[in-house]
View 1 (spheres, rainbow, N blue to C red):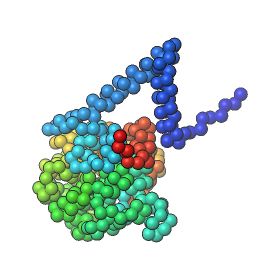
View 2: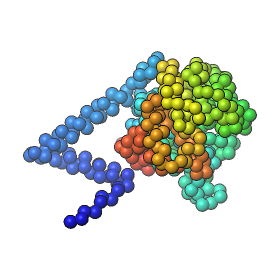
View 3: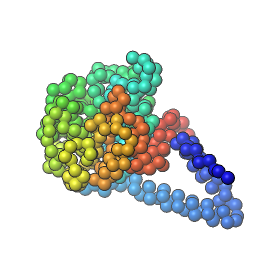
Length: 369
């Protein structure tokens, strides 16, 4: 007799079946007979997993740090939305290379059929639905006038904290040194306004053709750290040459840590010409030994490549030791290919954590007990 192949399940259906299995396991556990022993074995395994997860969630192991923190993997929608500053950086470090970051154009709703984007979903929502833990807004001047944040498909917000609560993700913002629009330029006053409005993370970087250099990034990182204090998350570095070619070296990256960055942006091997796995691994180790996390970036339009690129980039990123995985905004207007983001997330942290993040995206605010 010919047996039809199994039909692939939608991720949310699989989550439902998994929870149903857990409920059935509890019922079986209270019955006598051979099945009870099997369920007890499963329950013991689950307890060991929870214990290991809790242990891994309580401390970080970076030099100079011994902070009680949770892994970003284990945070629900509300906890993610409230995450910001150094607490965010520590939660990323605790997750041991399993954090997904998506960068999007601030003013884009790629799937909206209307020019003004008043219907449909914003790019923030789309990348969140496909597994992003953190969303970073690029070209912020296109959506923020310094007072109001106007986002097609989402509405108007007066703070990044309100936006984060609405979408269930911490919201970061790109700032740059050099000749860029004033509202995007990295300066203490502008940065302070963003932080006071609830920006979870300031990413100091450089867009294509702006001529950003590591020396310039070190100067603004130092300036912002002095102006903002120690509690703000400052992640600094380049995703590509940005019109100013220079080699990525441990010295250039640790100089950013010395300037005050608690996170460093590093192009993944396979995205920036000439950056090998060996050189990248050496740079990552140096940065982490200096006490910062590393975000491996895909910012060379390969966030819109075919899916067969995922295993190479994802496992290389794990091999060199990055803490977070960044997807740029250059495929659909102002965002990555969401299916590539999903496949990459599965590659670096498995379906369990990926589906969990996707499923929690649709959960509303917690009802007080």
